[in-house]
View 1 (cartoon, rainbow, N blue to C red):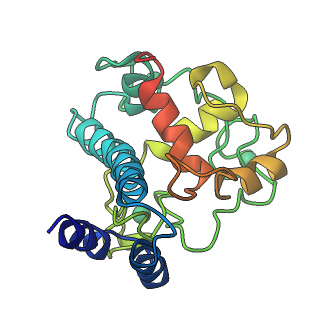
View 2: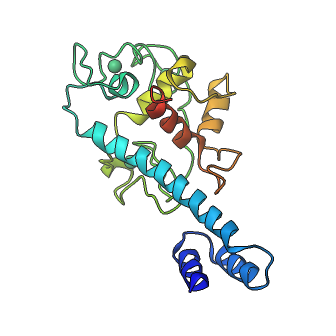
Length: 213
Ligand SMILES: [Zn+2]
Ligand SMILES: [Zn+2]
Ligand SMILES: [Zn+2]
């Protein structure tokens, strides 16, 4: 009975088929105990909870009035309004360029574009692939994107490049090229012991958790 219960847990989990097979055969031949599998499933549930709370935060910020600056609302944890509309008057992104991420006024850019990695939406910058069964993007990508993260995530990532105190996560990148590479790369270490997710998602989580730790 207990065995059946754990096998069902393994089958329903979002591990790869090979991993599910390996876990079940490992229990059968006694290589690992049921309690170890239980621990792995707990880790898996934990990473899903973490990713889901990023998704929920983005949705809840997007429901704020369009007058609210979503960047400062996330950082200050309360609806913040600047003179102007949304994040247009935000001091955290003022005189910074959304095209190249450089420090100059809008319209003065002659630099190459800051490149969004393949498999990310070039409009809202969110990943198109699911992570641990959690999706951050609908099927409308590029020009048709109306993702909740629009006009918000990109600004946060830009503000963080110039002010590392905005989030608790550390980033080794000092140049824009390094930052471009780091943002979309996998975390390098496993998240909740379950697998890797891109640094940009961990950075978003770090913004959200900033005042909760
Ligand atoms: Zn602001
Ligand atoms: Zn520029
Ligand atoms: Zn998008």
